[in-house]
Image 1 (spheres, rainbow, N blue to C red):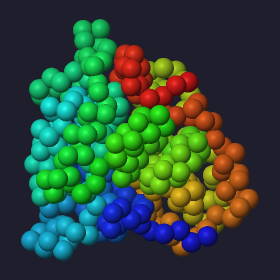
Image 2: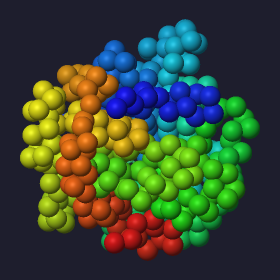
Image 3: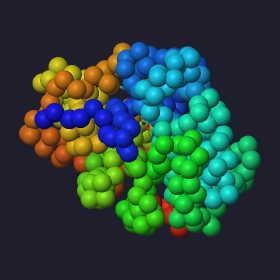
Image 4: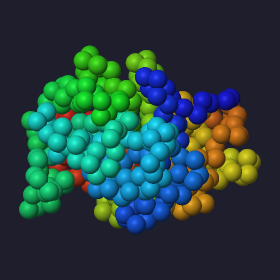
Length: 323
Ligand SMILES: NC(=O)c1ccc[n+]([C@@H]2O[C@H](COP(=O)([O-])OP(=O)(O)OC[C@H]3O[C@@H](n4cnc5c(N)ncnc54)[C@H](OP(=O)(O)O)[C@@H]3O)[C@@H](O)[C@H]2O)c1
């Protein structure tokens, strides 16, 4: 089964293996991005909330130099922070991202999450004294989406889309204009078959985040909650298929996503793993292997990034996930 290396968004090519940037220090990230560019990555994913846009921008701009053709090779994605989910704040947040990235335009701008925090200048994650988030319960998602759509008129963003939304929210926004892209958690333990089917019906390309199981987040949540998060890379079925193909478990997990028709944005700071994660085009999983991987799905129980690290956020009327 040959799979295309790009999604085409309104005439632009978005590589189906991109580079994730969450949870790396600035110095480490700059080196990792340079290694990723060398390895052939051209799609980079960040967010205002990751507080790393400036570091990513420095690494990208070193590579672009004075050559506008090199900028055109790249596909750069960033996202509105949860505190910016208000029509009067969207443009300010967008301009902040553009400035920190040091770019003239962004390829894809996403609403990061459908819920919202109160806007507190200089504090992207405002908390109450008890550690819970200062949640803004008044979010008008349709109004935010209309404002995001308007950004396209400036020419400073080529496409706009959404992340972490459920099917009802996507349908509600699609009634105004269909998002160009949907970024959600998808991996072997959380396969999102019904969301992928809905996105297919709507013809919205899907990008899988945490495709390798987001070890740092899983470890962090396990320490806080005592819940067990199995390591995707150590699952016996994944290891068995990896051995059969002389590939790494990560390559098997990424290839499964590609053959399921989605894009993926693995994050690594290790040059060898960075190269391995994009070398997934020259082998194929057979029907039996795809079936064995499909059987690993734990549905909603397999979700890692459930935002429980933002205490109290599940009370927001637009909180997207239901157990
Ligand atoms: N929209 C959203 O709300 C949202 C949420 C979460 C993530 N994201 C995006 O998706 C990206 C990817 O997700 P993620 O960072 O959560 O997790 P991930 O990519 O699933 O996993 C990253 C972890 O896997 C390790 N790793 C990477 N390649 C490996 C390999 N070949 N073999 C073994 N281990 C490997 C990394 O360690 P090393 O660095 O040591 O290799 C890191 O610990 C993020 O960086 C971010 O850009 C978006």
